[in-house]
View 1 (cartoon, rainbow, N blue to C red):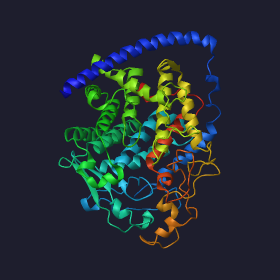
View 2: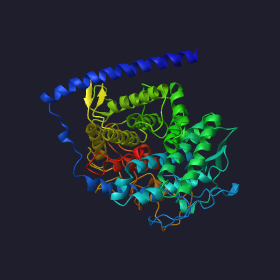
View 3: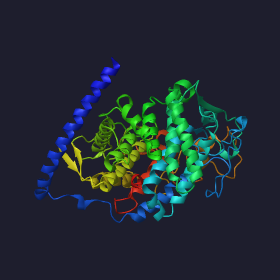
View 4: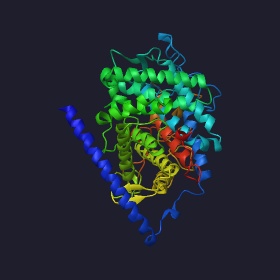
Length: 527
């Protein structure tokens, strides 16, 4: 019965694809005549003369990766940070000292850390040339390697992956600097008995994407990453199960509700990294089950579907070096169509524009870390805009209306400018940017003076003080404003004032895509 339902669903969406294509052609004809009566507004695009502003923002954002590093710090650029967690992994004879703390506490959560690496890799692959223009490319690569070194060591055998260092509940009984931690830091793993398809597949995606970043820099390291990615994908697909079911303790922190998106995400990156057509066949044959075609979703550390759809759209837009089957071609069209449905929802003038916005126009999805969604959406909009330009795709079709690539880019510019200070609060949500930004970021290391003797329990006085943080967490992107465009600057206001590494990876990608006036870049898929 279930198989029959999937078959019906597939034929329904194939019909939608054909109908949409015909509608697109008709709309394009009408649009060509409309231009004679309604000149394009693209000349009003706010994408020019912003190089200095965004270059400055990028150099600031990149610094947060250095703040979050664990282990023996090399060429430490942050005066108030030092070596920490030097014994991580020692009880199983593994070096798990590297990696990054995900937020304001001192647990290393593998799931969001891997997502951080995947997004940072994608950003480098698409916009590395832009990063290089402002001398940030090497910093981005070094930050990425700090994570992937950890991920390699966390995968000691085919079907074992260490996915967490530290006990979150124990960690949250302390408020202290990472350099002076003395509490136990237990390890958590997924394996064949206690599977974690979601976290293993995300880690496979991170390693596959990173293998492309390092391919021309260090071929041996790149090959090692790719080997681990392939092993992890096989492990994830063979032993299926949610890591938050296998390990209930993680549900309170990074709970996972599905793993199909991570399997598609990993297979998509493995296809790009290897050119192995079996991975393309995987996303085609498993699309009915996992892709949720026609129903767009928000891109985040927990749901990768929108990222999958944009990433696979590039294959549809640029073509494949290999011959692809009719089934694969139709599935790629469905991925692209769902990506475009998502993107149409972002455009404020679109007939399908989402209502999930603040009064001042910021995309706002969730009260907990709202900027994750607006930045992630904007990043995908910029990437897709550039795919359209590079593939000479003139328009995005949104139920009877056509939009040019510049309109996606303009949406992203407006979101980024809001974040950088063009908002009702007249403050930047990127710490260190501009003259006004959050002073009480929820971050242990930033809140405690370096020169005080403070231990696990008495450090809480620094959490509750109303004074600004003595150490500025430069580059931190806080959770962001409320639905009413307001922000309460308090360490205890965690949903708004806490910052994460995946927020930083997303805004690094967004800024890098907008750092030059020109939208046209040489996408890595064409190399």
